[in-house]
Image (tube, rainbow, N blue to C red; front, side, top):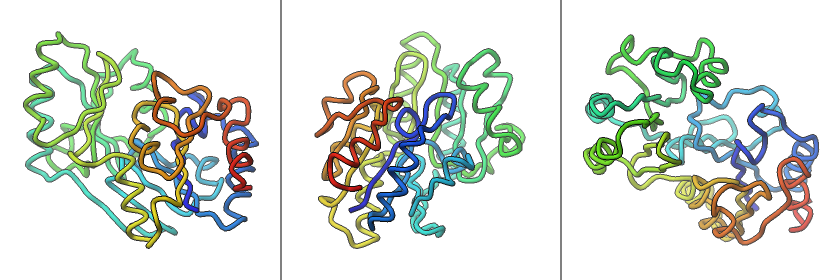
Length: 260
């Protein structure tokens, strides 16, 4: 089997704390011959925590399926083209959005845009020297997707979405935040691409997630598992709901399905 794990809210909490049972469960699953992948909306540059990676994974699907690594090698990589990237930044700024451009080595943002913003300050704190200014690197970004703070009038928000609809699919978290992912890509297509490249049947996959950006992943996998702490209507897209992150949810699901 091939197992795919979301990171935030699934493997760890907002403080990046990982339950010991989650670490044990994933390691036992691998020892039993199952391949384990991270499958995250985070770009690869934002997946660098040593404790997380130290669990041991066979591969990483990052930035909603636009980049895939297996056994330390990049086997798929889809960047936003330069002209589209410049058009994107100019458009979102025109409507008052505050963007974070997400790549495999760096994230790009203007820190002053996110002063007092909990997520923005988390990014700044965790990225360190892997953070670059958008204007400082104008047009030279390596960009798989982007996230934007969107606290602007609804009319402007909708106009911006419409102008960029030929390039991106949107994951609208609420009126304050949107993720823009190249059209046709999501965590579910990431699973399909991994299976294609590894010669595996999608039916032989499990996916574990907790939020709406895991919807396609849960629907695509042979078995979709929603965490007990899932937000919104995520559970509606799962085949099974396990316990929450803080109560050994990953371990219990792996045990339930005989994977460990």
